[in-house]
Image (cartoon, one colour):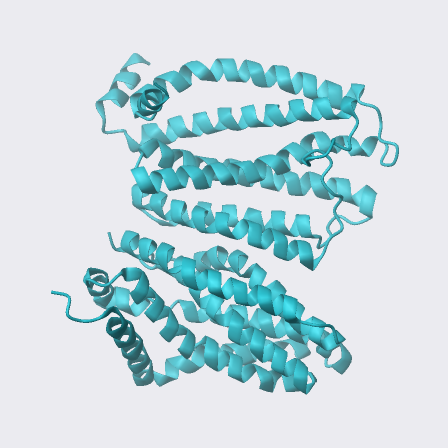
Amino acid sequence: MNTVSSFAAFSAVVHRDLLLAYRHRAELLNPLAFFVLVVTLFPLGVGAEMALLKRIAPGVIWVAALLASLLSLDTLFKSDFEDGSLELLVMTPHPLSLLVLAKVTAHWLLSGAPLSLMAPLLAVMFGLQGDVIGILLFTLLLGTPVLSLIGAIAVALTVGLRKGGVLLAILVLPLYVPVLIFASGAVDAAMAGFPVSGQLYMMAALLVGALTLTPWPTAAALKMSLA
Amino acid sequence: MIMRFLHKFSSPPYFYAISGRMLPWLSALLLGLLAYGLYGGLVLAPADYQQGDSFRIIYVHVPAAWMSLFIYMVMAVSGAIALVWRIKLAEIVAISSAPIGAGFTFLALATGSLWGKPMWGAWWVWDARLTSELILLFLYLGVIGLYGAIEDKRAASRAVAILALVGVVNIPIIHYSVEWWNTLHQGPTVTKFDKPSIHVDMLIPLLAMAVAFKVYYAIALLIRCRNELLLREQSNRWVDEILEQR
């Protein structure tokens, strides 16, 4: 008998993943530290000239965010796959796509959200101004959930493989291109004093599209990986 | 009638037999089209009033670019068929298309850079069409890599089908995002609803080359599918019968 409502199942999965992450706090910091490190490398690589840094800041921060999100994706289904709880999730009477959405939500709360909140600090270090930083934060909050949602498909496809690491990057990064273009485009436009609503609407559309479409291929890929 | 033919066509032994009989005809057709297209394009067609003779690379570049998109669509559609109806032949068509598509994509990029050097003064520019074609190449490489990484080939086919479908949703998004981001490439000259803005003497060899490339794809696909079928069905009796006849 199905006595648990779908909403309860959704929040139970989110709660469980957050609790698990809280018990392994050290691992949570890795993608964040990676994000800060990659951004820090750019002034060392291209020179510390403030005008240049200001020019490339949106792109640098966004590319670093893509890479950090790629790094954190690996944890999305891996431990559940290894200890068998993924099979139990598949066997529950609830739609797998909903449970997948719950896992991605938890993953975004643990990776994308802290990363977005960290970004304004880095933006200050790159000499960006207040309102531009606001736009940057807004694009990150709109864009990083899309990264988690799209990435989940690729992780689900490669979860059973031992050598999935580099393959994951090849599968995921081409699909990240639109997010990168619209997000850094919005920040660039904000810096030049142009309106940014067009790019932000596009990002919102990407987010809505990803929210509604990606759980199904992810669920299908998970079932396939477990079969 | 058509459904019955398709049903029969998708059975491995029948496909193997009939594709073997189709190959010589297709090869003859390919040679004819290539001979006409190349002679018409490289010799008969007048030189362009702006680009001189260097526009003639269009006879390889444009058909290759068309094929790169067309093959991705074939891959996605046959992937969808494989996912829904579990037809073995559709799985094989999907994965056999990927390396050919990657090849055409690479050819379009390479000839494009050869064309770009005299026209734009640079081998590579971060233009919308070039960039989206490059990303298409990465999508193909992802499909090939994923297929190679999964041991069980039927599971690998399903994974590839899912990935191809995800990619097909993303291709228009990627296309328009990079289009708005930056553009230098010339606009379409043939594929538009208005009259083509290319002279008829240049157009007809181009269309012949486009059909020749399609026929080449059909030949390469059939050969790849036949090999893959033999590999996958090696424990079946009809494969033994074929091997005995050799």
